[in-house]
Image 1: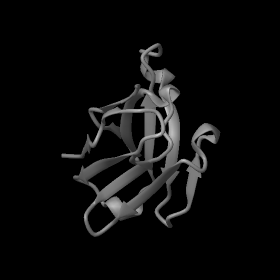
Image 2 (image 1 turned 45 degrees about the vertical axis):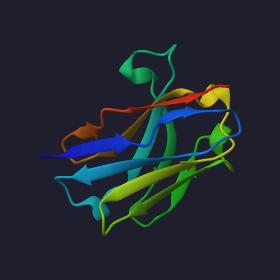
Image 3 (image 1 turned 120 degrees about the horizontal axis):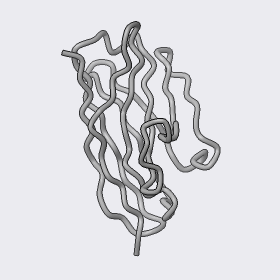
Length: 119
């Protein structure tokens, strides 16, 4: 069964840091690009999820402009894990963060992990 499970969310003050993790199973992890999306509280429809970061199978990365220089995406193919290191967090980073992979015949989403940035 193709599955993604996120962890690591929580409540953090502005300027703080968090590391999100995503455990993948059921597919050849190293062959696919992995992505982190987020969905802010005011955007409840699935098509309103925002692409935050991508890491390709060759480890090339891309970021949403608003997180460049603050967030780092990485992967560990030996452990089938993808990570999102989030630094200098801002209140506008508050969202549910989702791990995502686009397989040949379906797109797989995790259940999401809540990140709240507030003092």
